[in-house]
Length: 513
Image 1 (cartoon, rainbow, N blue to C red):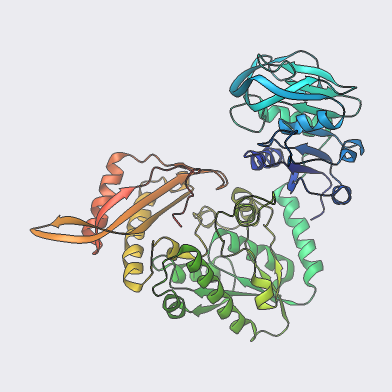
Image 2: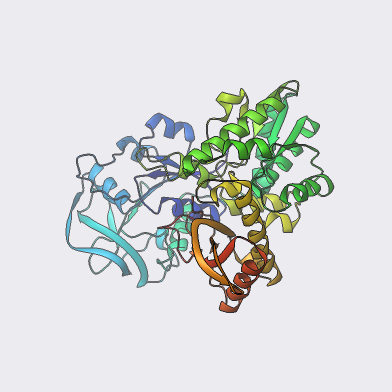
């Protein structure tokens, strides 16, 4: 996707790097994260309008500390270094970085000491978020101090002639009061961005790219019924029309009546004619006695491919496969840093082209969920569909902890339906990012009537989030939870205890597996 203006974010391992991306995109400027291992040639090819260097957990003097090609600072492109990024700029250009006598973590007061376009209309003595053990003690030649804090006499620097800036604090986090304004100033006052990255422009560029890539070939869309794959299908159809063939596979792992309901929406509201494949028996039989969550995901993924391969062979000139892969999927599944840990294997990331002999079209690979929803709105997809909660590719298989069988699936489908219906009836569905029930591999003693029971424990989960990268648990009214618990226990045979998950992400993930 070619963009007139693009911000390159070079990642040095900061926990906040994705937040930098979001802050830039919130200003309608396109941005991408790349590892610090990106080459100078790759940077030139990217043609950035500006470059932001992230923070990082290491000292610039550590033996294996991430490094930076000094030539990046001499290509006449504005640069903003954040925390580690600032320290690295200083080291590369002849300044001095040393361990701080008093490390600085948490909120601090920023005192602006020199006028700079970076701090245009930023309040003096505003609160900023610090997280560093090293600090600058000597400036590189040509740099001036433009701000300080109590423990950082060099809190922000600028080389105005070279348009190189650095801040010791983190403007990307919400704890920095004027952080968004500072990033906005860098984008618009320094990089001279215009903010032309909108849903409308994204759609236009994507359609042109898809047309150019596909030509007259046939394209298959793996239409799960989730927001991502559905919006992707509508976008691709807009580009190539009837050369898009949608396939919906009923895995048996979807929510109650979901396969039937979304098929109706595809046909009647979205004009997405599709092939409906009921492969539920195949999926469930292959999952028999499988408890390991990663193994379950792999089995579901391989079965999904097998079914698709069989169907794809029936379609002449099918050369491409559409998937609704999102940026968080890529981040969590494939390290952008090179050495980070894979959190989980995603059903829709990696491996498919090799096995299916189809080339991938992933129009949303660089988008967050809320950005995809905005694209869907621009494509006039009904709001009730746009606001559907995310649903994992492996479906209910990862919401049944341990082995999956039809009995457990039936229990979970009924309980989940009661839970989600109650949320919708209460008018709070759109306040919640994701809500679902989890069937635990635990049975507890209960009493129903005069009888002693020994049945499953069900966990309820509901979170608020913007992009799924971080999440907080939703604070239901106690009466709501009590009513839902009673309904589930009374109506769903096999459950005698309901608990509510109040874990945030991190340290937990949103899904339990």
